[in-house]
Image (tube, rainbow, N blue to C red):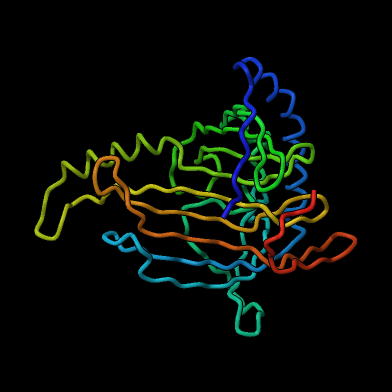
Length: 276
């Protein structure tokens, strides 16, 4: 659970918000560039937990977990990063072969590229103010993408809010949903409602939506790295009425770094807040 937030200090006008964002943007871009330089410098363990929910009771009816060795690599044309996942055996060693989790969500580390120049042509940013988030003073920035939701694996298909640590410009937390999701769900509900009713149900599927949260709580080289992704998958049972269908949690532990002066392993997460 994320600690409670402090009261947000908001800009007094749209002009002040725009001026503050313009002032911060060079540092935000440099932060994304620094994260990109680290993309090929670490590996970690990744645990995927899947909980399926009963639509009537609203309670999880089954849960399973799977562990992977996680590594970022360049794809074949070296234009973007992809994830190499290998299942971990009982001895905590990779069993070989690349595995796919097939979730409609970007890779956790991809969010750190949010302020890269290649994304600024598609994503609009708006400065919302400052507040305490996860025990850290943070700039709060809204991001709205002009790209439609297709598969969900590109951060440019999502819109939401990001919390950036003051002065260090580290990523603290991201909360997002697919761009234009409300309009898409409304349109899908109309199609579903007007579809043919058969003895076993409608011929069209119910509208399906997503909510995403990313936490960055592991510190290395004065940077914060992703530790958890929560993805909630829900369906509409009425216009604007939703029930959770699945809840996916991705956890990242046992970070190991290379191409740096000292290799460091992550200790088990504790309850104490990070030192300021």
